[in-house]
Length: 110
Image 1 (cartoon, rainbow, N blue to C red):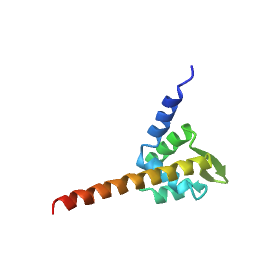
Image 2 (cartoon, rainbow, N blue to C red):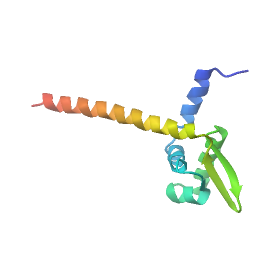
Image 3 (cartoon, one colour):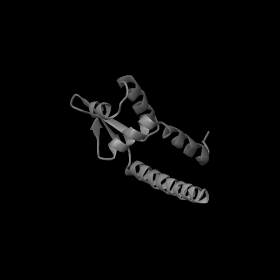
């Protein structure tokens, strides 16, 4: 049975709803990285990183492969980086709107 598109999108956004997963995706925007580099850049236990990488793999957002003795991770498609950039732009716009409202509220106190 096919999942409705809106449900598949909701699952994608749930997958993105964890700070470690977002951080890993941000790190992979610069290109493939071995697990050891990800672990050094993300302040979590190795088992936690492994769990989060597994979630990203199952969702199809990252791909893994071996390079000699290293397990490498990469974004599965450049569209993942585009999605992160869109999130950054949206967050910037939302925060800008909040800053403007805060300034307006502060101006009323005078």
